[in-house]
Image (cartoon, rainbow, N blue to C red; front, side, top):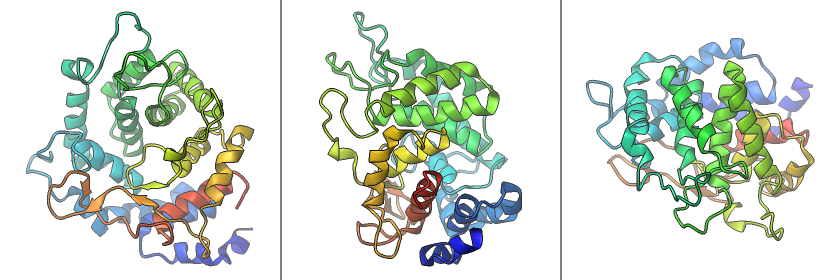
Length: 326
């Protein structure tokens, strides 16, 4: 079966890519090669131009001289991008970046206005951007950077979960429903932590969060069935909510076979290009050589709806394969 799949022109292209991240994902996700056979390939990712550029602006102490959340060049987003490209885990040189994020995220100010908003008549709906903690938990696990403080971020998300199962940072008092964007990333981080450590509170919270999204078929408003078209383009490399990312998380948590994913899978399949690939429809990080808002030091390949982006393609094909649609 693996040999038959390898006859696919788009898969041949991915396997022949000069990007080791693409090759790694193709061999593991599409050909089913075990992780232990890919260790050398994953180590080589640290020597790529993309990885070097992401880390080249560190100071002598290993930190980056910006606010941790600076878009998209601060320590937080640097670690998100390193995890995205499968940077080899266990690199102790990344610890100063993690500490910058943890010190910032666990400071008392982080749970105070305006970063967090409390209303006396809504004690169960604290306004917090849970995607921050969610991403930090996720990349701490992927990059093997977690320590005892990771559990503090996990427990914070568990405590702040809204009654409907998600999270929201909408400061308006009238906001009573969780946010798609602020729910998907915490779900991902909590599920990964719960699975890794068999921590049942994280597992249970992730299940409730998944149900919040699945009740809405990932892209349809529950109240009136309205399709939320603002989420339909594939955003890359910074991900909050789109068909590929939402389905990728559903695959990670073992929910891709849920019938309520079917319509979202149709949306993703409809984006496939003539050559079998997928595009980075909205490229939301400009490759730059200076510190620039929403800039990235790294090159993330071509953007646009009509040009195949290999990093997007390998993830999309992995989702379709997991769903039995490839």
